[in-house]
Length: 128
Image 1 (cartoon, rainbow, N blue to C red):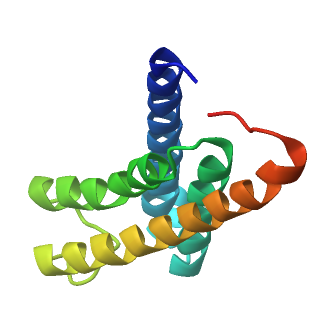
Image 2 (cartoon, one colour):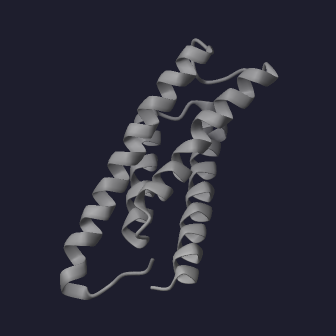
């Protein structure tokens, strides 16, 4: 794979990760008035990270891109003084959310990368 292909692949992985993370953050904040089960958000984060890590070799890039949207949205809402689904709406709570969702995203990416690695021997090289 040439350096140009690697940079396109990393850019694609990052862009798709940000899109997925943005959509998950939108679901978390707006669907059903922000009353979506946290378990559903965890499943979406892990699933999106796993899927993108399976498709792209840059698993850590995809995990970070999916993850970063969630804490950024909560920080932005806190700074703007908007009501939020996180209670108490403090920086400490947002930090705890950020750490937990980072772990979830990295675990999902690890699972996706492991699955890609286990399939790459039998089906050839995947995209990315």
